Length: 95
Image 1: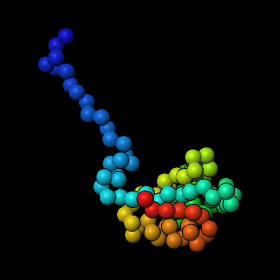
Image 2: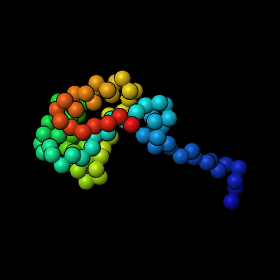
Image 3: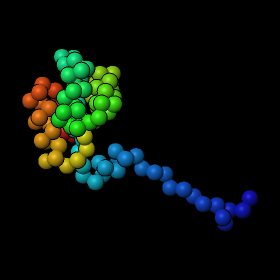
Image 4: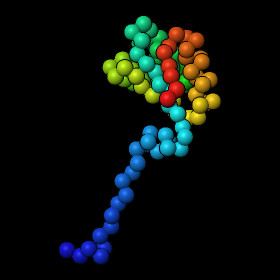
């Protein structure tokens, strides 16, 4: 086997890990067992500008896993979304 022409490929870093290393934070939606799926979906569409499929996926992940990251960015950017979502009764944190 000729090893001179062997090309080693670099593994592609996970997008979340790469973004986190750049100083970005995550806006995390937590399961609260109070709000309905429809309310959560409608709120994510309204506040976060998610499309219907993305909002549904976030709602189901939150329900089954207990939490889901719904936005990525710096603290000031995410804090606006956090305040709006909190005012509508959703449990969100910035991590």
